[in-house]
Image (cartoon, rainbow, N blue to C red; front, side, top):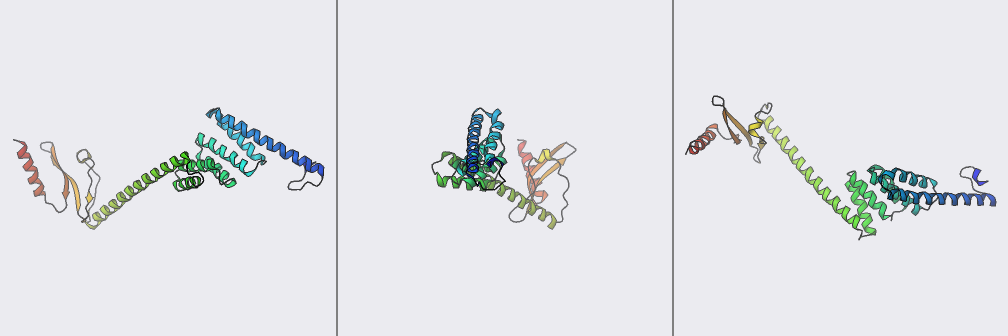
Length: 247
């Protein structure tokens, strides 16, 4: 009987061929039934998603359907994993679906969506583009492609901001080292707020400076004290404001 044939051996008799055809037909019928059952579980809601995944997995393991049908099984399991938040597994399933059927639009969309959720923006964009090449009017793909572009722009802007902050910090440290300055722990933050030392384009340091008057428990705050300035100039300005505030 074909049922007990050695693995990878070919049927030799009509009986063996008949038995093998019967087994393949049974496996195909089982795979289709499992696929439909999996679809029903998905429609029943999140509580039944694990059961849907089990059905799709068992259907895939039958290895009885065409590549196009197997692609749909992987794509369906990808969707269920997406709904559960299993983005890495969803991407793996979508990629398997695409290997079996490169024109599977749903698989391309799910691969793009899973990649997007994982922060793999280059891959997400690529899957979207491949999908839109086949279906330029696909609204889901177009909307996702737009979201990907927005996220990429946000990340590029953030990276540029971080790069500038790092560059400014390195320039400031270099300026401290060139001037042989020793910087201690920041104090009087309640008076200086968010003001920090900064280096201008002419390589000149600017400092926030607090002047304390302990005998009268008061202080003055100079937001921008250029290293080329003198205390007398700032003190004259403070005195000017004090005198004028009395009238």
